[in-house]
Length: 130
Image 1: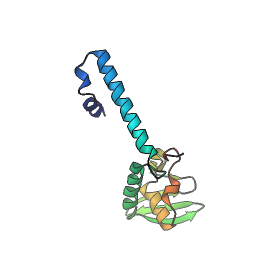
Image 2: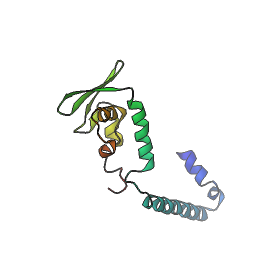
Image 3: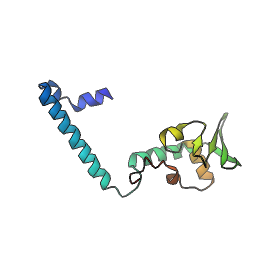
Image 4: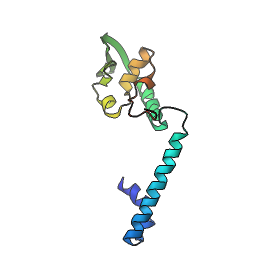
């Protein structure tokens, strides 16, 4: 992350401190405004990066087999690995779904078995229009 920021301010780094800070401020504010304008023009509720991660998870979910247990609990297995997914509480024992707000591959395997729309299970804080 520091390397990216240093590359972002490479021209401003060699200026006097006040000029450098002013250049960094201007660059950051321009970038924020540009990103805000870009997001306002999107025609979907979910950011493209999140959709890309969701597609990657769907690809990984191909290998997992889900079987219903009870009350929204599912056992998801692949080889010797296994996880428990609670589709109602939106949790998985791998903890990835809870940490990122994006359904993990195990949860996506359950959704595939039950013909559910994964976009409905993305956390509201990730949605653009939440």
